[in-house]
Image (cartoon, rainbow, N blue to C red; front, side):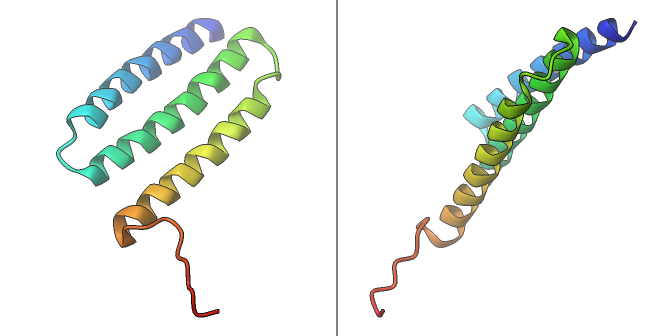
Length: 94
């Protein structure tokens, strides 16, 4: 029973990623595209977790952590770039 629920959840997450890819391509503005990319990262983490449950293994937990860190760094970088126009502030006064 639980495996059927996991399969349905994986299918729903895959459909969600397809809709988010459409939002990344046709997004009305750049912030909408950034939010869609972040949501794709979250859904990817969820799919990997569900596959880990389906296969009854904990081998993918490191991948989940790595994707979480990369997704956070990417979202923070995009947000800073949209706000200031640069990712790294270089002060030459020092």
